Every structure is written in C-alpha cells, then in structure tokens.
Amino acid sequence: MRALIIDDCERLRELFQAFLEKIGFQTDGAPDGSVAFKMIQERDYDVIISDMDMPVLNGRELYELIVKHMPHLKNRVMFATGDSFSKEHTTFFKTVACPVLFKPVSLADLKNTVQSFTANTFQAL
Image 1 (tube, rainbow, N blue to C red):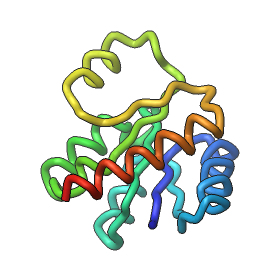
Image 2: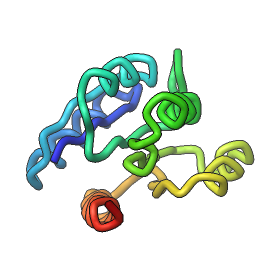
Image 3: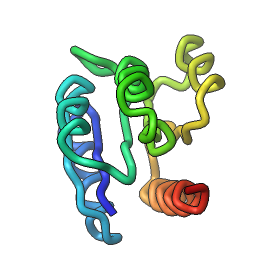
C-alpha cells in the first residue's frame, strides 16, 4: 500500500509518513497540492491524505483536479485539517465522500481511519 501525505507543515507531514510506514505503508510527502498533483500523475496511490489550507494549491483545489483528471482516485482521498470552523470547509466536506480528520489528530485515529478507509475502498472495487 502506498500513501501520499500532503501538508505544508513539514514536521506533521514527516510524522504522518513515519507512522504510516510503521504500520506497513510506503509513503511519499508533498508540501502543497501543486507538488502533490505532479506526484499523483507519476505514481498511483492507495491513500492520499491532504491538508486543506496550503500555499500554491490547497486541498479543495487538488481534489477538484483529481476528480477532473484522475477520477478513479477521488475515493482514495482523505483530508486532515486544523480548521474545523470554516464554513467553506464544512460545506465542501458535505459535498464529498471523503473522510476528514481534524487536527490535532491522534495517531490511533489516523491508524483506524486509514485502515477502515482502505478496507472500504478496496472492497468497493
């Protein structure tokens, strides 16, 4: 299983990557949606975990590019955000079928969500 972690906070991105590697994932990291989109075009990912608020290309914009150009990946996207009060974010989350984790994320919640998410994703195929 391969995961892409997208977050402009390098320390958090590295923490998520290290933890997911510990539970058996191969991981890559990207500091924003623009870099991530290039990576997604070059490699297939089983899980894509994206922050919402990032420079250059944010999580919503990245998701829209995925839906438009690689719709087979849209059900592999999860979001992790520290902004649980944004009306824009909550409205967006209601329109997509993606899991959302709110920061600070416990590693137990990350593990449970990723494992249940990947199990559900591949059962649906």
